[in-house]
Length: 421
Image (cartoon, rainbow, N blue to C red; front, side, top):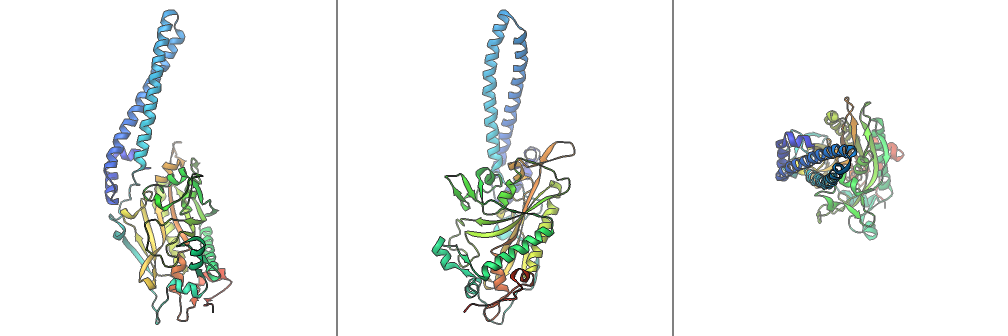
């Protein structure tokens, strides 16, 4: 949720953010009005309660007719207090509902516009070139007996698949490389639940405009997560964290589920856009003033992983209109996919500032002894989609694929994945 103090003191900052995102600026005015009503109702309620306390003391000291009159007045006042308390509660709900519909204010410098308005920050590596007609990842995967889309569809429907043989081993190797990198950098590994309560899913901001992407089990009121970010954010919900020794960092390994609603006919070939995949997700809880430095740290870790996999990539600053509601800034890293002749996203990392923490009530204790919301950040360190870029980038004319050196120790020293006759 947005910072109520920022809303009161500098609503133009939030209006500008909404405009950059392509969202409604009228919501800011609605939220301001709701905040005024809420604070007024709370003030009146507290004032009436104070009067009620004074009257209660007078009743205790009164006798005879005076006491009877005061008792009658106290009963009327009690009814008014109860009524006003309900008004205050309703005003609180109205404000919270409106404030939660406003996306996290973007950080200065985030590009305005939509999906195509990103800014390229840097490119790394030479794009692969071939003296033969390159095969796409699915043709390679089938030749290696690493990917089986046909049986995936038979068992579960479209956009499901089996990773088999070397395909299964390659994904496990990739995830283990990422896990080791995260351990070396102070992340605590977690294998997270993939079903979460509605309040946790809502708290991370995933039940807004992209709710149709989420699988829901109505009989249990549970949601299947599309990223372990959700469970990792909920891990410390309703807690006060001790960040005196630095950030708290976690690496969550989980299967992820996405409905891919509205993407019919797009990227349907192979495993680029599927309903189920595995991912290792980094998640950091930090002091708000350290969030941007932590963001850069997560991106550096992601780049080291892509470099270890010997991939050509670019880092982009995602435009405001393409950010999720929780992200104040997001960097994507996109690897070059030779047969598509374009870059495709392999990682995202988002600075959610205090937005998720306010919704999930995750705080730290300040030097004054008061509590304040922490900042949260998340970023992908490895996922199934990486196999697409690895296969296509490192393919050879005979259909074999060279294993990147960093992955070989996780594959028993295997240097080349060979087609299966």
